[in-house]
Amino acid sequence: MEQIYSMRLWGDNGTDFYSGEGSHLPEIIHPYLDVVTSFLTSFDRPLSVCDLGCGDFNIGSTLVRHTAQYIGVDIVEDLIDYSQRRFVRPNLEFQCLDIAVDTLPKADCAIVRQVLQHLSNKEIEQIVEKLGQYKYVLITEHLPDNDFEPNKDIISGQGIRLKKQSGVDVLAPPFNFKVKEASVLLTIPVNKGNIVTKLYRVF
Image 1 (cartoon, rainbow, N blue to C red):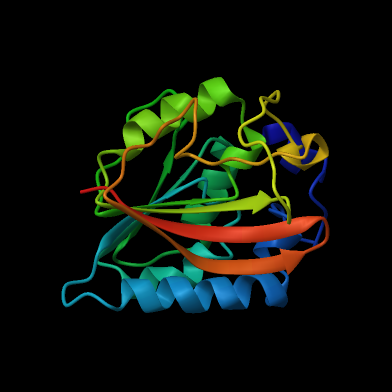
Image 2 (cartoon, rainbow, N blue to C red):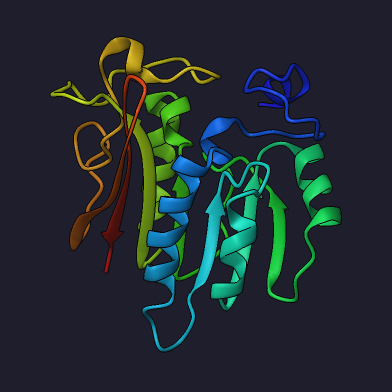
């Protein structure tokens, strides 16, 4: 991931770190922010949120105000250092972690936005095992726009499973994420598929 940022493989908007169009195009981020804000503000007591793969924090920076605590997590140390300097809120912190290997922070809700799609099945399995500690999990993935075979394996990196006519479904084998309830919050048609956000209630 460090190489992706240093080589600007997801593009360049003139800042030190850029997480790509999926984190910046208005037609993608505005509907997402609307539905996630609606979810977060539906509770009498604000939730604590752990953003697993927070990237350049263009998305998270808008959501922080609707939470009791917001923890942004990313594997790129320089990105976390940059975000700690740029984004300062009383209820906000950042942690540099490998979410497949390290212990994840405690919170009411986990956000995993367009992260799993870049990872191998082995890494996704390691992450899904830990998602059971959160009451709510919001997962966003770029999926084919027609029937597809889920969870074809890839090598972790810049690419995703669309070239294999596949996408990540954490409820399907080999992940078999156990949840109480699952619902689709948002589907955004994009080139070569849909960006789909699902809400899982774990317990």
